[in-house]
Image: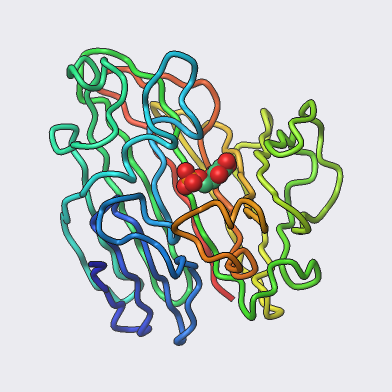
Length: 294
Ligand code: BG6
């Protein structure tokens, strides 16, 4: 079951499910900003379909020869609550996952055998002014490991307007390289101001030169969410990519934990550290997004 936390001063709330430390709700002024599928499994039998699943240590399907599950193990295990505070400016909740408590999805031998070791911390800070989610990944072992991470954020698109390009869009990725996982065409520089949804959309926008992602998201009812994100590996700022995903008709029909028509009600905008990075022993990587609601 998700646990609800309140910021007393503003009355805004979040809910976190310990399975995957999945943020399943963020509400300000009685408005929900996150989408969770009607058919999401909340019993630990599957990663939660909605909210903000945490992707670590790989994004997407495993590389050749690896048996790591898609998007890694962070979203498939039960995290421990660490602490919560409720201050004037914001409330803050922290969860953690140590490798010793990872039961599902370790995949590769280096993780299973303890050659690699890690501790994950997840801090969610919120008020009615913003939501900030930070994933901190620590290498607690003696061997460096490859690291990718992503905050797989499902935005609620109000009034089921995800396919209305005037009301639902992502702006701010002009100049990024678009790797389109649906058309599979050669990656190319995105020259439009705006991304809208008219068919299955699964694209990774990346840049070698811009470190922090900054986009605005039209959420269906004329209002706009501002998103910014940044990442570090061993204290060094690294470029953050941004995935834009909507399954549309066919893919929605093929997902057992997603309603056939619910692609009208959501849009995933997912900042991530997706380059080739290695985390050395004793070092940490961080990925932070800040969401400013309408
Ligand atoms: C997105 C990927 O981040 O997540 C898509 O780019 C994928 O390719 C989607 O389909 C959902 O993944 P999953 O594993 O939660 O079904």
